[in-house]
Amino acid sequence: MTTPLQSVVAAVQNSRKYQAIDPALVAAVAGAELSKGRSLKEAVKATKNQLHQSAAVYQSGRMAYDRWLDQLRSTWPDASVRRPLLRQLMAAHSSTNERLAILDDFYPRIFALLPPIHTVLDIACGLNPLALPWMSLAPDSTYLAVDVFADQVLFLNDFFQLAQVAGRAESRNVLTDCPTAPVDLALILKTIPCLEQMEKDAGRRLLEQVQARHLVISFPSRSLGGREKGMANTYSARFAELTAGWDAKVTRLDFSNELVFVVERG
Image (cartoon, rainbow, N blue to C red; front, top):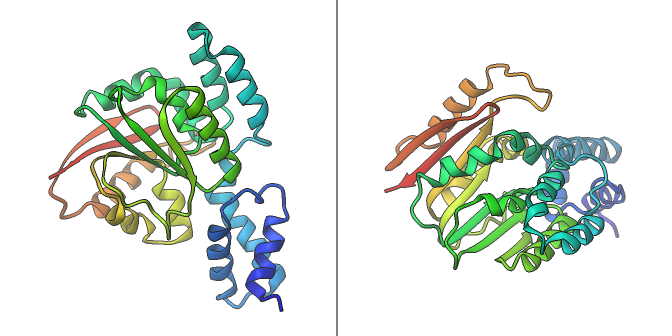
């Protein structure tokens, strides 16, 4: 017999927009909505809305992963077109699209504050791994990228293979299944606000689980529509709450639309 939770999950994942999202995340959100006493119809609508606000809103329409991979394969040997194509592809995800205008400055400023990095964990990565050519990683580095979209994960694994990067991507709900293996660097870029839309204290729990000597934690300083709305001050205060009591060195970097904290744990 189908349970109410199974019915809601099936209805949500029957939608093309949400079918690639990690089933564990869909079930977690759906369970929370059902626990509020919602009907099945109401729970389906509320679950879709939550998944849209925290994940799907950042994807600009249909993600043409197969076509993108073909483009990458046909042009990768030509270094002169490699970065322009990667920029073009990153524009399909709102989070990386917002960073394109500052990309040439973004990672150089960050990595200037870091020692040689051999292992990276990129949480809720989106298309950020496509920015690897802009990162100053050690030649023997390994890269683990996690996100909730299974089709995106497949694309990124093909990209890592093409780029000859010792990397892998995994579909995970980091609210319940965060990687805990020690790494040199954890990238948590504009992730905490998304997680905290689903669970109020998700950011704190995430930071407690991540085992990284260095962290790059960022927040948007403008909305998707480009408005400031005091976001930098709000998120600066939230970062201070999340890291209160830490034995850590923190360097703040202000970019035009992103607030970044480079953290070295003691």
